[in-house]
Length: 231
Image 1 (cartoon, rainbow, N blue to C red):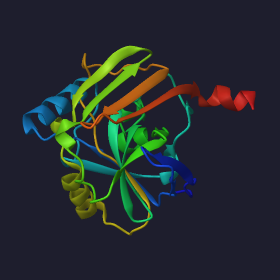
Image 2 (image 1 turned 90 degrees about the vertical axis):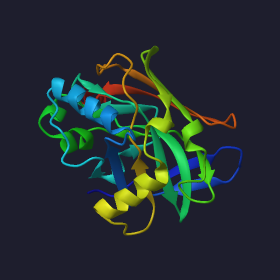
Image 3 (image 1 turned 120 degrees about the vertical axis):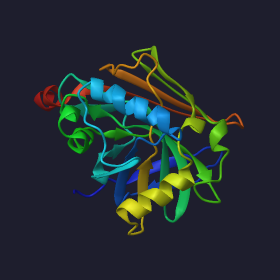
Image 4 (image 1 turned 60 degrees about the horizontal axis):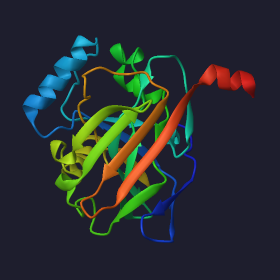
């Protein structure tokens, strides 16, 4: 794994910046609370040629250098797509909630899920919410999530459909360990509105908290080879 780039985040409602240099990036999959819904999602993916996971939930340790707050990210190929996810962030021993996208190569995913995730950047929004009492500080079930691709609604629902952050964090530590330091944990996602991946160009992500705060991020994708040719 390569060294992560230091990122500067902003805390909603505060002036102090958060310096983040993640030593670890973990992307969690199949994190739904309802086992029947998870099974249906696995079958949905199987219909698209994606193999079932070895465990539920599943944790994919990836290169922390993939985490980015950029508004444009480079990908390879035409069949990649993102999705809205809550993102747990630990920086300097303190916890935060952000919004991000587990952008993935959908062609490669049919044969190598971890590889498909590892080949794409992991965009996160530059603004976060502080969790002063740890991962379970917020009213998780009251948070609404949504995404759009090229201005078309793509996902919508509540995080009550997903495992709570405290539960997910404990499972992640049991599965992958915790060497300490800064880290980023993607917490899973909601079903797609029409059940089909869309390889769009512009992605808009949103988390609406019960107290009225909102976390958003918008990013566009560009072809990695075309970008390299221009430079």
